[in-house]
Image (tube, rainbow, N blue to C red; front, side, top):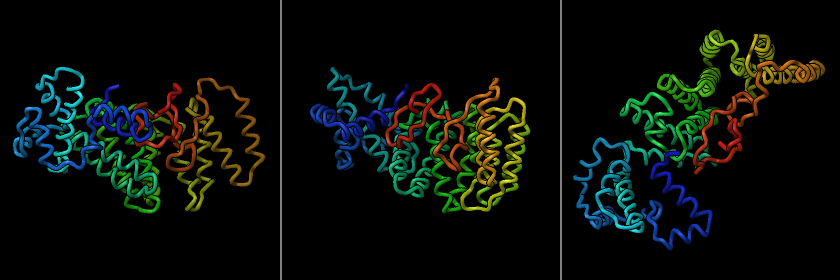
Length: 366
């Protein structure tokens, strides 16, 4: 797995905080870290660069960084010219990257780069622990940086972005967390739901070739957001068009039904929810039929038909499974538990990301 220097630096800094042995090793080896350089002045950073034979000032450094999209891509060639003789000297050469990214942050904070984008994403994870609204606002700024990087490079897929700009948390994973945060913040702030609509529409437009599960989850996030802001006709049209093209999309039927019957703060239309679930359940070859059946049982329970719910459970255990996949694990994301399909998550560094115990299909922590 490809890791950027900002990710390696961040992991090392986090490990120091949680492991006393690692902290002693890092401090004993005098390893340079960004987290230990914030007190230095601009001139002290420039002095450190001069110590490596790099006679740079603000103007010459600005020319050097012109057109660059990360401090790492500028620092790499500079480090390569230093001719370090051993590992200890090479380790101290990390100061070159630290100086560049620190001065970039101070002098050109609005100039997009990988390291400052990664910082915004990680700041958002910390804010998310106590303030979803602040997290969402920070992450919208990070999303804007992602789009600027895509525009600058012509990137048209999430995989391509993650290869070109390997953040501590991949875009594949973080973009889904962004949607979840906007949903949570949007329940108390309509502007965040409108922002969620814009993010989902832009992601679907820019990255049209993503895997099926990612695309399906994003489509449902888009439609449910339209429904939540009161644009129910738009949501209905979206679900109708998607399910007309792929009527076997089981979680599409579930997501559509959930808009009608499973929102705690709005009137329920269990009749419409049941109609949609039954339509999906009866579709030949529908995917995730077990999950649809479970949602039908919930409708029966919520409408006082517990006998029907029990009969449905028995039929679910007796029927022929054929080519149908088993029940999906409930998800702690937006909407009622179980409306989001599992599996759309890549393994990778988990710095800053809370462990919600999600799993990849192969059983690896995602």
